[in-house]
Length: 92
Image 1: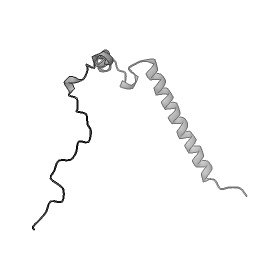
Image 2 (image 1 turned 180 degrees about the vertical axis):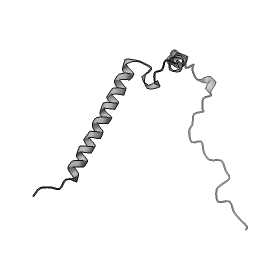
Image 3 (image 1 turned 90 degrees about the vertical axis):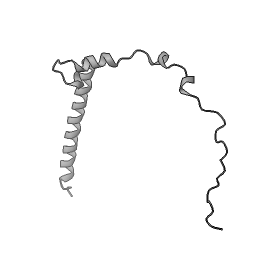
Image 4 (image 1 turned 30 degrees about the horizontal axis):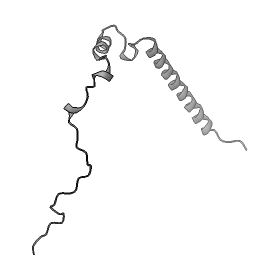
């Protein structure tokens, strides 16, 4: 009798009835991607003008940076005040 295979050796039925498409059959993607902006952004970010990378794009970057810093400092102060109030004993 010997060892018998646990899994049948017959091929299983087809799971999906449709055939797969090759990459050459797909439509070109140039129509919806638009212009490649990477070379322009590389020129902008690699320029040696002394600005840090997170501020190179002007006013929107400055607004985001300052808002983030204000929220960080405000959150730190809030946490310190909450910690101070939690460390004080309650009056009875």
